[in-house]
Image (cartoon, rainbow, N blue to C red; front, side):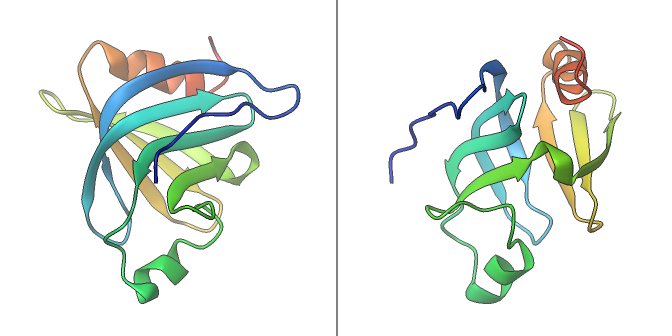
Amino acid sequence: MEFEFEAGKNESMIGSWHVKYHAPVGGIYKGRLIITEARVLLDQELTELSPYKDRLMRGVLDGNGHLNIPREAIAAVSSAGNLKKKVIVRLNDGQEHVFETGVLAEPKIVDALEGKR
């Protein structure tokens, strides 16, 4: 299904970046990471998740299979890597969502996730 970003009430996009998303249940997906004041989204449908894996990611997938993480679910943000920069988003339930990005985009993504524009 085609992804169309629609901002919620009192919500605007902070930024968007092309990334490779490493799902905590396996699988790598290329897509556009969108960060707003209220949530973190990925425009790529996670179609290859089995029903078991889909249950493990309950609460972070919208009805169309797109990643949709509420900001209040984020416990910590960190970065790693030298040549392949990765931004790691750890949720309150312990899940780790990894976004592989370019060297120049990584600090901007971390700042956006930490609320620093």
